[in-house]
Length: 227
Image (cartoon, rainbow, N blue to C red; front, top):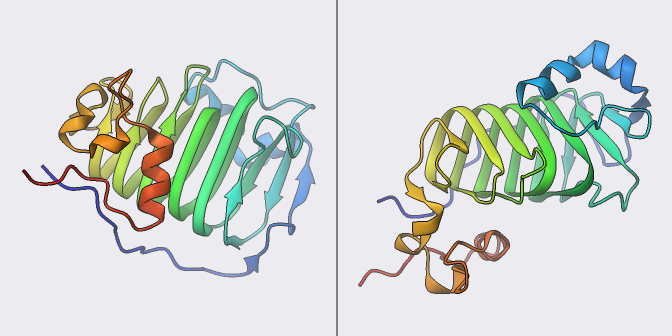
């Protein structure tokens, strides 16, 4: 069995570099016509309606390069969606928590981050997605999903109904059958075979995504020690 590890990033800036505040706001209809947003959401059968007048669409015209990237976190920054017409390059963690009305992050190029943690009902789309350490996702019962043509990470860790769909997935994959495509290495309920005891919830016997993300981002080992 492969060990959770780090990978080397392959995505580099391709053009104009933007910061977190360098976005314009499009109305949902205009953004949908330009980026085909409804078709993307229909692909994952999103049960909520983030493409409405109550959710502004923030558009970055070029590569967005930031130290950290945080989603709206239950509307703390206002209910909004994000489109990056280029690459999204995050030095540290890309974190998106959404338990309210649903939201999406659409990147026309690639997403590259130190770690990715998605919780609740956000939907993330990219042509290529890579995380130097871990892609962790959980609590997706209301439609949370990650969709990319290729996914690369040291570890892909999925639990509790969040969907992960890649044309190809590279790295150790731990998750629930039927929710991770196209392959699965270790079932989430058997994660103790691959992860250290401190990363397994003793009550549910399932992995703690948040603990694994924090540990791998800090450079700690999360794999089960050799006996």
